[in-house]
Length: 53
Image (cartoon, rainbow, N blue to C red; front, side, top):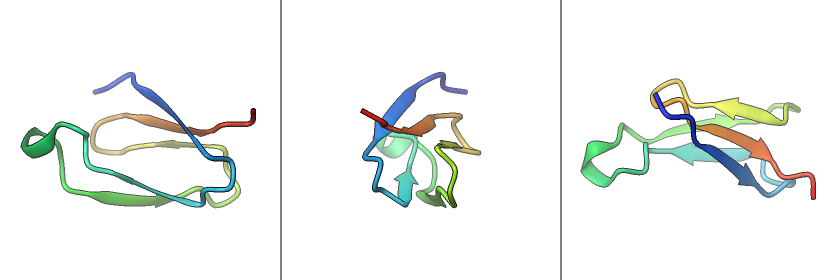
C-alpha cells in the first residue's frame, strides 16, 4: 500500500486512480468526493486531498 498524498484542485469532484505505475499499476477506478475533502484508493492506498490553498 502507498503512503502517497496527492493534492487536487478544490473544485474537482471526481478523480481517477490507476496506481500510477504504467502496466504495474491497477485497473483505473473513479472516485467522487461527495462533499468530503479526502479519498483513499481501495487498490493502492493513495490519498487524494482537496487543496485548500
